[in-house]
Length: 464
Ligand code: SAH
Image 1 (cartoon, rainbow, N blue to C red):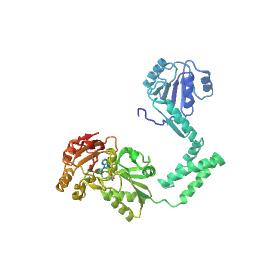
Image 2: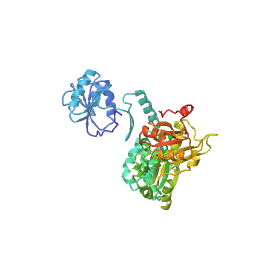
Image 3: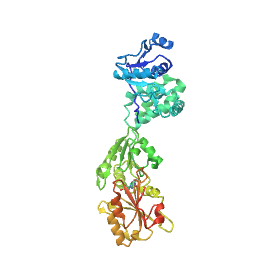
């Protein structure tokens, strides 16, 4: 983003337009919607400008723009229809400390004016940084058609009620009140009774909300998937969009957190490697605390919450505190990794069972049914297996596994920086050490990337 959109307070401030022709008039048309004090400086004013000056709507100064003309001005538009003159104006104005826009000269301008959809006080600014004016116009037309002209009126009346509405508890209830007003009450009232009906309708609606019992809080234990935001479920998206509080793991990337409601409280309960940075007890206490206050909490976990996600402890804490909960499944790392190497996790005549195993548990490296895993054709998705790779290799070989069994490590599955390290059981610890990195890695034991299958057992070590 080379241009950062903001809304500038212009009430009572000076805005200067240099130029007296059609271009200057066009700028004035938008600027006259603001409460700024407008000055136009030009040697040759269009009669329309004279007219506006006579009516007291602008200050007209009939001489060329000069040094000091932009002092105390918030904005200056160089709109003289002459690129050389525009640049001269811009230089002088910048020296006076004003922000300058040169009409049709994006490069030398310090700010640009967006396409505007005006439902004052609701204003929508659309900018493309000059890349696609056609797109900006199309978006504007679309929004103009979609937003009722009465929206601005409703917003203005609503603004006057904001203080009163604070009697409603902050969060969901207040949000629902405003949503009902803007999307149901206001359009109906304006159509039937006109603007004057809005205030009484708003009072009545507020009384109804104040009388209703407070909505109880809840916790949804939601799978965020392996990292690609497009692999979120629709349900996860919807819940994120409504959550008051989001408590997330380290595995959840920023791109997914950005889908949370802007006002949501986002809490990072990230766990680092072996040692938790926030204890499981603290996380449970946090969920309970927020939900008990009526908040809608989303407990967002990487992958599927039911796979190595300590789901049971969290459900137990919620049940004990009498808080309503639900589980929303997500795509687990094993599925994303298999997709990444074009393989199936189960296959007729190869493996009719798939094991999800962990490389380490609370006690250290985890013991498994090594004998079963060592059988030809066995497939396992090994979570948290990187550190224990040598231990896993040792145990499997001890139980008779073929050293040439393919193992594929997938790092950052489904993310833009995903890496695939295809190796064999014999080379596993070395291949992982050579690959380095400290992002999440899942080991697909018994699976090689589809492209490399033909080359077994002389696998290439790295696939991008
Ligand atoms: N509930 C999660 C697993 C949590 S355990 C799920 O269903 O996926 C954490 C381990 O999951 C990591 O150590 C790693 O082995 C694996 N993992 C999670 N996301 C991953 C990803 N995008 N790529 C590779 N491995 C991942």
